[in-house]
Length: 433
Image (cartoon, rainbow, N blue to C red; front, side, top):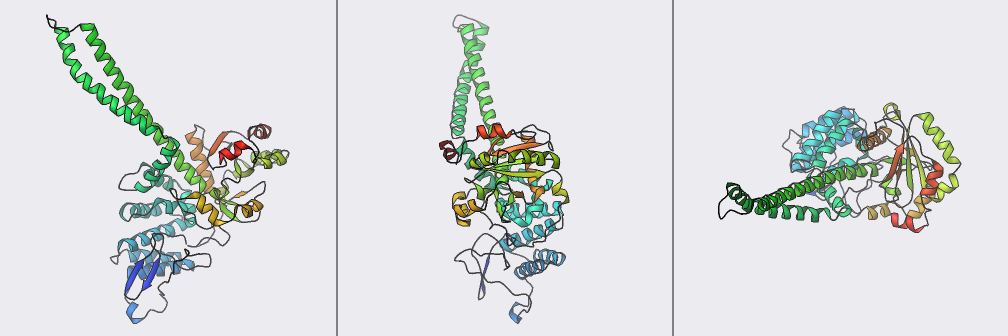
């Protein structure tokens, strides 16, 4: 399982935590980090020295039980670990793995409560929740959306590091926002100081007298100061609103990058792995509408392929009827390796998974979505952000860098798309990467 907490290196009479990733149980699909040697407690035949039950042994035993399909028994072990005076790393592991059990059983609220506590009290990274394929079913639930919104808003209680990473990306995309804010605050302060000295002059002008200042001139100065303060404060608040909207969009883009696809070779990849390689076009709607759009796209297949178009059909309702895949705590054998989170080097990680040339050879004209419920939730969130009623037929065209290029109601006009998108070898395509 791509689980949280820490990988264990057991030494005589000492527990060394080598990396803030996970308590990991060896499974056929797990690939340990290069250069890190992992060994685990065996709970099947405890020696006299390890016969005493500890939080550590309970977590490892829980992982072992889950890998055998004994989810209920694994859940008991994780709950027991939390009662045995665990250290912060052990508590984080127990809570996270307990959440994965609840997610597997379809208990979204209980999973969210465990993850929220791990985020608040044990420094769980929100990116781990985004990365873990065993939480795919949870990420399609409303409880995940609520948790993600809390993390996006940030604060010291939950998800502060997630918001910090989002803000770093926001600053790159809007580099002058900080400068505008600085000048808004500085000029507002200057106007406030000027107003502080101008108001008494206005009072004296109203009262009259030999030494009273000119009334209309003083009143004009007061009006200018008040108007300036109002305008600058409005600009500051507008910048704040735009930043929150941008952070929400970046958060959605981050979720989008984690969505899985199955290529024509039956290989499962995350959307981020296709970055710089294709322009995915998401077609979301009922089965008849999407099928008709796919048929029309076949007429322009050659030209669309020249432009790197990859069709991604999403049929409304398929996510509600899809059977649950019992993959346990490990990534499925055909799935891509777990990817690093937001704030890390995306280019490096995509290059480390497979050579670009090999990946291109596997990409055809169409890909199938994996975890349809996750895709539907993301599309409906995107629809809400653009003022479209969730559940309407829509298409969404992505850029080569993975961000949303544009979207529209109904299905696309393929001839217009051919005219709009430049070929992959064109200069405009290179600038889009």
